[in-house]
Amino acid sequence: MTTALERPHPREARVVPPPALLALYQIRDQVIAPELRLAMLRDLKDEVDAIQSVRPRSGFCAGRPRDAGVFTPEQRVLCSWCGNLQRLLVDLGQPRYAGHASFGVYREWVLRQLIKGLGSAVESAVRFDEPAPPGTWKSLHDLFVYLDGRGELTGTTLPGRGGCHPEVDYKRLLLIGALAEYVHAALIFEEIGPRLHGWAFDSQVRPDVRVVGESALLRLTLSADTPPRHARPGDAQPYNGWVLEPAQAYTDSLAGYALRARRKPVLTV
Image (cartoon, rainbow, N blue to C red; front, side, top):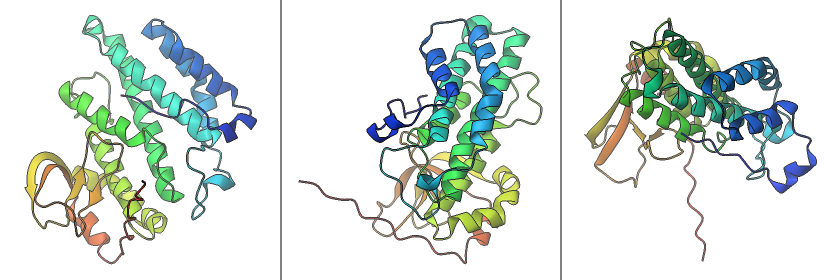
């Protein structure tokens, strides 16, 4: 699992990075025990949360395109934070820590924070009509595959997880990401946002489905850094891959909204 945004764009060199970002870079590059990495990240959590609570500035507002490759300090902090959490989640999942209850609790905390962080990037992208930062969707898909391979999607194997249900959280974020294809995505999200968690329970992610003309199904490319998308005229049929089948209530609620025109790829010679 990897998160991009490691090298600042030249235009960002004039911006003084937050101290938390420098600390996150240092933690990422150190070879240290998972317990110490966890303690260092916990010490930074309040500062990261405070940075993320800042409303995005003028380069990151609805309807105003941002220069390609230029990211706000808030985005960069979030991406580095998630990158550190991804590494720590894998470290804490190594076989030598199996059976240690305390490490199960550590992984629970890391997983919660990782889903929260990646979810924040997805939600902000829809609210402010911007693409999610590079690496966001690939990290989410990788997390899904990683937890699925370990039998941890439903939360039955990590002690003390309580109400954390990573499969439902993942499906909820897929439902949010699919809204970006609609003309009034931010308004739709504002309208149906409180109901998405419940609809996620009734949605399904499944592989190896031959889809012909099922417009309600959303196509998923787990190997790509992209959200789910609707089938459009000209797309290959039948489609044989992963799909998200949204709850019927979700599909019904979007029936009156128009999809954006899909941009044609720019050809270069």
